[in-house]
Amino acid sequence: MNIADIVAPQRVRLADDVQSKKRALEQLAEILTQGTPYLTASEIFNGLISREKLGSTGIGDGVAIPHARMKGIDDCIGAFMRLPQPVNFESNDEQPVDLVFGLLVPEKSTEEHLKLLRRLAELFSENQTLSELRDAGDGEKLYKTLIARDTSEA
Image 1: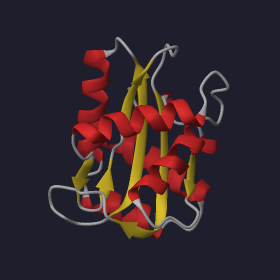
Image 2: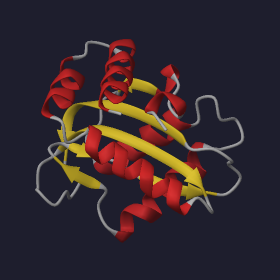
Image 3: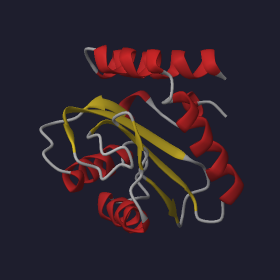
């Protein structure tokens, strides 16, 4: 499964002013509602926060992959945002985060969930990918870069 299978262009953007992890997750929840009228931002935010309480989803190098299992969805849903300035995400490497990929998976989707997380971690471990995402000037360029880097690495 490629990122293009789960991320629509309207769910990739430069974030507004974000000063905290909580605010980043709130904005991510709002973005994840785009094209998913059966989910509310509040439901998504609560799912992301619940997962975050188990341990930070900051994976290092300024990247976080907040994720949650959600009732009522049949397919994985992704979103990506670049923050205007890095925020503390309590990552293991203690580096602040400016690249955030949100992932929602069906409640019972264990193996698919793990495969996607592994694929995303691999993608975001590539220095060239991180550099290109940080240099992208707008949401459209972010989307194109994300999709191009994913399919070239798949």
